[in-house]
Each structure stands twice: as C-alpha cells, then as structure tokens.
Image 1 (cartoon, rainbow, N blue to C red):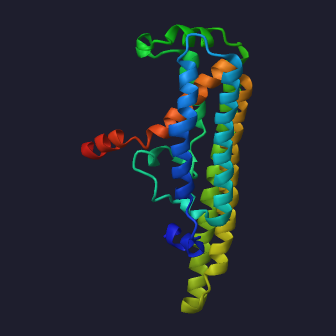
Image 2: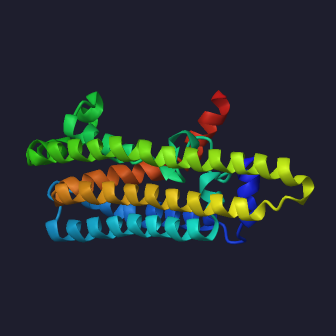
Image 3: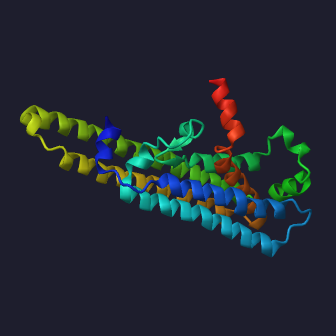
Amino acid sequence: MMKALINRFKSSRPFKEFHTDWINTLKSSILPLLSRSLSSPSPDHHLLATQVELLHTHFNSYFSALDLASNDDVSQLLFPDWRNPLEKPFLWFGDFHPYSFTNLLRSFLEDDDDDSDNDANYDFLGNVWKSRDVSVGHIVEQVECGLRLMVPSIVARSRDAQAALVEKLSAGWRQNGENFEVDEVVGELVDKMTCVFLDANRLRRSVLADIMEALNVYQAAFFLQGLAKFYVGFSDPNLLDQFSNST
C-alpha cells in the first residue's frame, strides 16, 4: 500500500536509466583502468592517485544523482522494482548499506582470505595492508560506532513517518469517508521520506569519505577496486542465471 500511495507523485524520469549508464561506465572504463594499474608489479603512484580520484568522483556523482532522484521521485528509490533479486537483500534506503563499505575495508585489514595465495599480485597487496597506519583500524571503529548510532535513528524516523501516515489515513477515512482527500497526507509522507532518504544517502557518502581519508593511495586503490567490483558484480549475467536456477 505504501508504494502505491507514494507513486501518486511518481515522475516520468526513472533513475534506472542513470544507474544503468553509471554501472556500464564503471564496468567498461573506470574499473579496468584501475585494475590494469594495480596488476603492475610496481604501480605508478601519480597515475594511481589520478585513477583513485576518478573512481571516488564517480561514486560521489552516483550519490549526488541519488539525491536529485529522491527529490524528483523518492518512490523509485525506496521501492526499486527495477533492482534485480541479488541486489535487493543488500539495499538500505535505495542503495547498498553503509556497513557494506566498512565490512569491505575490514576484509582487507583482517586479511583472512585463504584464497589470497592464488593472487599473482598478493605480495604487493599484502605489503600494502601490512604497512598500514595503525590509525586505520581506529578510524574503522569510529565509523562503525557512528553507524550504530545513526542507522537505528534513520530507520526509526522512517517507521514513525509511515505509522503517522496510517494513523492519519485511518482517521481521515473514518471521519470523511469517500470525501477524504489523501493527497495532502501522502504529500507529507513523501516529504518526510525524502528527508530520511537524503540523510541515509548522506551517511553513505560520509562513510566512504571517512574511509578514503584514512587510506593512502595504494590502500584506497585496492579498496575502491573492491567496492567497484561489489557494485558491478550484481549485474553479472552469469551470476544472475545461477541465482535464478537455484531458486
């Protein structure tokens, strides 16, 4: 019901089109450039710094586009029927949960992957993270501490907004019946949910910025490469076929 009500304000300009273009650019252009540099036994520092900045900017452009799309039509982000079934369990207010970012970074810091020995570039990768500043782990803990405070607060605001809508709709229909005008009430919900979405998206952007600030160029390159592969991986047709066949 919530989706149908919010869709009364639906825009004719779907975010899906931007998302497809953004993923394609990431997959076919930006990610291969970075991966090529990281495959070198001795990556060029200045070139790597440029590519890291390019990829970080690409992610920021995505978050900015999410903000614009939410102001235009938040329903297409909160109820994204255009997302595939692999993505949906990982979504939190329109995109991947910010814990995905910190979990990815921890996977590098903890270095618990038993398959790492099969990576031709493992020696370089291992040295990159073994030589990290001890403050990186502290930064991750600080970011996760902030998430433990912010995430429940954002979820609670969303829940309260929806509960208020149900209460107002029930009272309105009870008092006015078919003459009840729902647009104003639903419009209030749309405004509240847009604000909630913007704060959730701001949190995603902030977490990524905090992580990037804590890493050196080489660490940031490997982290962003992993994050890019995470985003791109959900559109892998082979993976989607395997998922479809298993359900």
